[in-house]
Length: 32
Image (cartoon, rainbow, N blue to C red; front, side, top):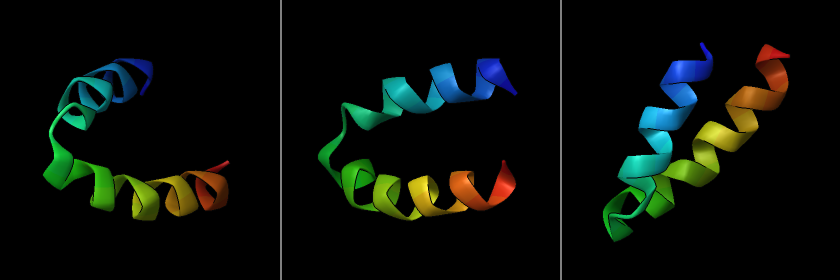
């Protein structure tokens, strides 16, 4: 799963993904 986070960080550079990132952050807390 660690590799998936690294791939998402690269996509973070795109402004479009920044808005989606907020939703993923909430899901990450539930996953832990």
